[in-house]
Length: 297
Image 1 (spheres, rainbow, N blue to C red):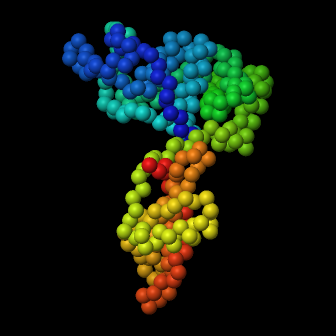
Image 2: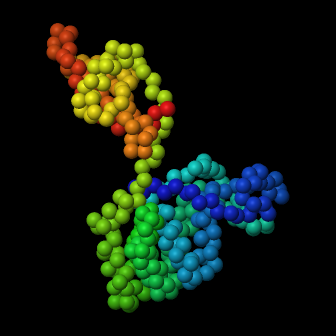
Image 3: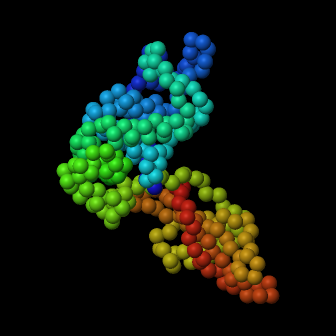
């Protein structure tokens, strides 16, 4: 799944105040007012625009982006808590509309899809689909290329090909079909998705040595140096052996390196001694690498 962080903050007015005024909103009859940020920022405004003028090209374009938002390929990473209570919000003074986190929003957007299939001019839908795909061809920024590709796919699959007039006009949309065939679940599709995935920055931690560190540190560092001479130092995490009965006993270790940007980062490794019977264990050996990477304070 591609994770997209909502970073661009839009300016809007609430009760006549600029965004950023976080005073509690109270209605004339004393009711608390509030709204999910993603609905406030784009979902409700785009829906309102679509219902007001469904045959506007910008309305259809926005529907494509909402379908991307609802796609199983996309997950929005919110920087804020989602309030699940029912409430109302004010877009302009004296304008109020209800909301509830969950099915109501999806129901509203499902209605938009039905309207697009039955009310919107099919040529406007086809034009938007084509423009989404053309932007895939021209866009250089990987995550934007992915969003345009997914918008084109969602609009072709869920709106254009399901439009009431599609069968009668199918031959007019060969170019859209060509792009859809090229970019829907193909190796090129996967390549574009992969290029847009950005791994999150590791957390920064102070590495704390366990009680076994003085006993094993030099020995483990010597073994690690044989595997990778670029390692700088190791930190043994355990206070005591983790014993796997009649199999081995294990310790966990941070291995510290300097990355290409010159920052110190650590990866977790495990070392073990195999059980030999009679309460005895063999020589210390490398067992494997874990899944954690952190920056070192």
